[in-house]
Amino acid sequence: MPEGLDESPSEPPPEITPQQAGDSCIDPHSQVAPDQSREIQTVVHMFGAPGRDVLYRWCVTQNLTAEQQLNAGIRYFDLRVSRQSTSGKVCFIHGLYGADVIPCLEDIKKFLDVHQKEVVILDFNHLYDMGADHHTSLLHTVTEIFGSKICPYLNMDCLTLEMLWESELQVIILYHNDLVSDNPFFWPASSIGSPWANSADIPQLLSFLDKHKKENDNKDRFFCWQGILTPSAHTIISHFAGSLKEVLAAKLAPFFVTWVKNGKSVNCKHGIFITDFVEMADFIPSVIDLNY
Image 1 (cartoon, rainbow, N blue to C red):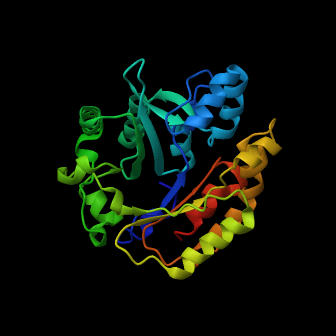
Image 2: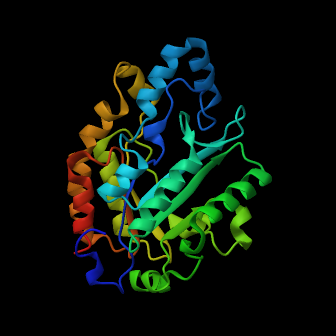
């Protein structure tokens, strides 16, 4: 745990986050994932390897592995997963298919075994090509991996570091599917608000964030501040040889970090800040500093 965090154990757990835990292991040679439109899938299929290369450069949002992110201070993981038709495995996706989800979850569990005062949030918020049996199987596997470390769904007013430490709970799992409505160990989609600007423009994104800051989110849930620029088709065509990191993320990073440093004005008890390529512009220490 970052130094100083345990000085206020009765406070809600502080959170910092990457945008996508599995992006660093996306396979540039894989098939187009089902989170992409039919038009994108058709175009990439037509152009083959060069098309996948372009998609890869614009879909990868993290360089660090989950283990590296944890060691750097990340405590929230935005997870997009899909069952792969060829292997039957549940894999990370973001434009293209990535690695099997299970080894990544096992790495997170190993980290928590060593660092027993750390708390991690896993947010399974995009789930593709999965029927009820596949969801049930994944939920069972996740429960087996984390076992007694899982914090059951509860009133947010009760959620403090002190309570989690006393109960030896280290994992909060959000799962955006109605199957968890009767499962006390998983938190429903309503447990988090995460407005998306859907813009490639820095001033427009910051204005969007300010608007939500002024409106104030008083609901009893987590709230995710997305410092994310989203490329349009025009953006990609205009920078065909570029990448998400080079064209958008690197330019946004210093501006979003400045916005984060003013985060004490964000009146939200369970705030989460996310961005692409978390190693840039001192994003992680800037968010940690908000807790002091």
